[in-house]
Image 1 (cartoon, rainbow, N blue to C red):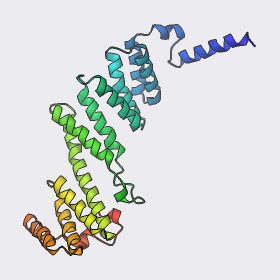
Image 2 (image 1 turned 30 degrees about the vertical axis):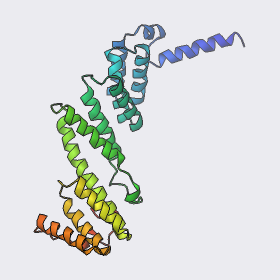
Image 3 (image 1 turned 135 degrees about the horizontal axis):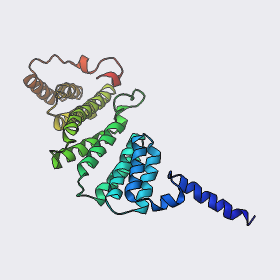
Image 4 (image 1 turned 90 degrees about the vertical axis):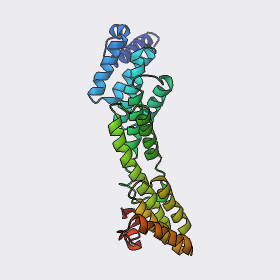
Length: 262
């Protein structure tokens, strides 16, 4: 048995080295550039899990230098493509913390926004079995913050135009979320909660066309609460802001399931 163990150890060593795609002696002599190139090739080929392992091996052997710095971003992107958002965000945060002045900070912020944007892409598409009032659109909000940080700090970045487009979408999506929650509360008799959520839309998304719906919900909620003065104020603002508005309570609170209102 003692004679077999050395052969097993050697076999394990050979297997570990071959997992990097090279012979033991070749792997030991690989430069940071060579390791980066191999990992990048795996990434470009769609072999995301293997590319992450190779980038991590590069960082372990050469923890300093531009290749190790870039590896964090590549790891983040690979995990993003491999549908591992938590791992992607961890790599991005690590990069931003360790290299706050790096020339690719704008890309890191863009990727952070994109990861959260894709992570919350089901905000409205798969909630039929879930109460919207119980869902926190945290990812959408964090995506917006990342994109806003990008366009504020790097307005001329190549990623800024797309970030602005996504921000515009997210603002409307978040407003719609609050309107759905307000409707959810209203249809269940929680009129004060409905009014407060409608006010959130007016305060946070007053520059969007969702204001009209928010005012209708607000007026209807105050009416149910017996707050006639506040109801009339909401109706007055609605008439002044949207003189041609034809939106009614029947439009805002139809008989259809609440998650299909918009």
